[in-house]
Length: 218
Ligand SMILES: Nc1ncnc2c1ncn2[C@@H]1O[C@H](COP(=O)(O)OP(=O)(O)OP(=O)(O)O)[C@@H](O)[C@H]1O
Image (cartoon, rainbow, N blue to C red; front, top):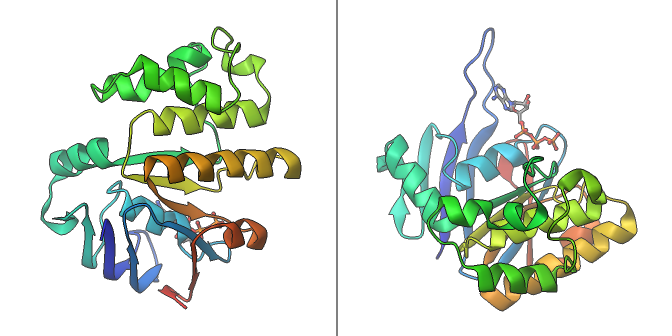
């Protein structure tokens, strides 16, 4: 298994009565699998995605990512594992406005010491970004910006791609096109995908579907 989430609980610290967001979530994802995570607003989908990506700490239970139990890691260990294994795509594209498309595509791979211009060029071509390399994010459509964000994530060569409502800002046509490309690219590269969505249609396109409700997977 690439990712195993075992009876994980999470309560956010805060004033007043504290209610657990996750009450014992269990979920497993094999290498190369695609899984859609749905659930009502506030059910804890983003929280679970962040925990799976070693971006935040859980209270009890265990998450094992690429063979490494996360509970035993400190901040530095989690950061290293994240760098080596995971890439993220959010609803907000989070591109660097002062960098060109080509520079944005290379940015995270370069930071991780895995700069591979040939791979970036191939991703740009596959994502329909040819000819846009010298443009800045503000000169792109939303769908184009999201395709750059997906290319930037996949340029890392991650084992696990975590996507939080990645097409949530796009109209239906752009959303379908971006999802198609993302699914093609993860299938080709054997990358596992955990994708949070509100859309039943999108969920149906992925290999598996899990629904979060009442702090557990239904
Ligand atoms: N950093 C935080 N501090 C305190 N509470 C938080 C924090 N992040 C999320 N929460 C609370 O935890 C609950 C779950 O939030 P989360 O964002 O995981 O839900 P979600 O299912 O992704 O929601 P949505 O579909 O609306 O994005 C919510 O009640 C939210 O208010």
